[in-house]
Length: 129
View 1 (spheres, rainbow, N blue to C red):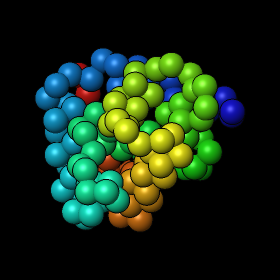
View 2 (cartoon, rainbow, N blue to C red):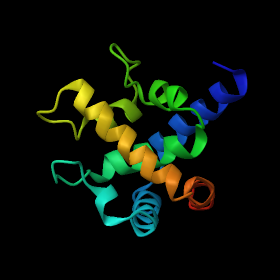
View 3 (tube, rainbow, N blue to C red):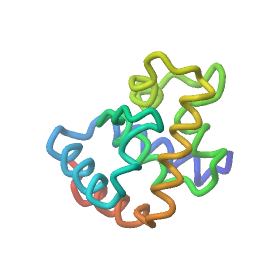
View 4 (cartoon, rainbow, N blue to C red):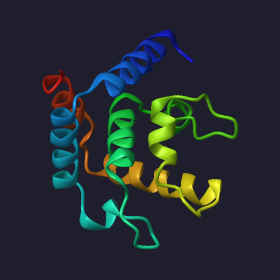
């Protein structure tokens, strides 16, 4: 992993950990407003939790490659235990790991297609605690 990406990810994890309720609510509200309705739920129709939307939205804003995105969230087999990973896996429930990774990639695709990354990163930076 490149040093500048590592620094971004460490900052992301710190921000995610210390973000207050109001900042999280504002970020999630803005994220939901920017995405199409079909992006806010899985292919089975179950809505993504706010924790999942927050973790995926923030991580997508700082990573450009899918591999870096998945590594940051700990989506690989024995992923690094972090609050981001806990948040993303909290919505998994009865799905297999492969199915859940597919759903998270699908959500990231919607985020990238709607070009929300720069706006969302700016939103989270200005709403910081």
